[in-house]
Length: 333
Image (cartoon, rainbow, N blue to C red; front, side, top):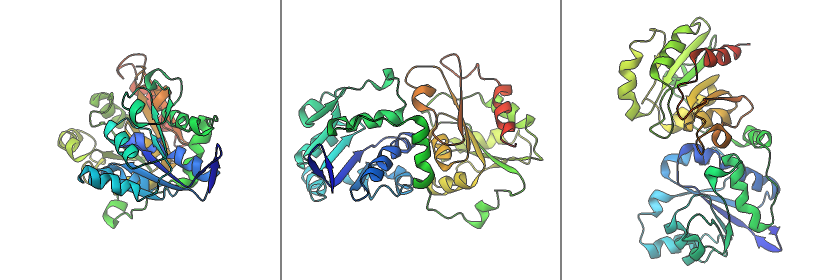
């Protein structure tokens, strides 16, 4: 039983029902709590498509599927949450419906952000946080939600990156067919060119130029992408050297996580697979614009081998092929 600010707390609920990268960057908060209080229970409310991310973190005890919960009547939702005997909910994602549900379910401590007006009604502990204007990384910002409980410490970027080493490992097994695409004699480099519209993207022509410059006797290059992106990528890959492998649209998220974990490096813009790669401990290079709220200050990948390049504008056009090439070939050493 954790005693925080003279309160007995047994069960935390983290609300984070947005995207893959956001969920990945919330895991260090869960790990930190579990390291301090090994006996507490941590539940994580998220969308079903991020389940594999949450379940790769042993610091989290229960995954609550928001997509299933959302199909229930409001009274059924309240009972579902109430019977879990949750002591604290951290609204790290702003959604009025969930804030109202937490209050109706009688969760004693409900911590929210003043940027959401409904939190003044449904939460009894509030923090002030302007995410886009903060000087903190997204993963560090999560720790501000613990302030009402008496926590003032915010771990360094290096400390947060180290948390993944022992507390992140995908569970899925790779099929023989997928494993065969990872070549032991070469550096297995995943190139994830698109972002499902979630961020700025480097020009496809620059990715192609980079791939054509990389020594293919040393690099095994794998193109990845979502099923939606595969339609575009299939035609684009045909113009690349025949050795390049196209796996876009051919893996589930669970499979892709394990594939990344077993690869050697990944190149992408600031999108979910970049954060998966960084957490996996492999080389990860992210490309970011300088724009406030989507820049590297807030969204840089966290990992022992994670790096990033930031442009000097709102897009990625100032990032040259040479800049990216020099980072990637250094990974061979």
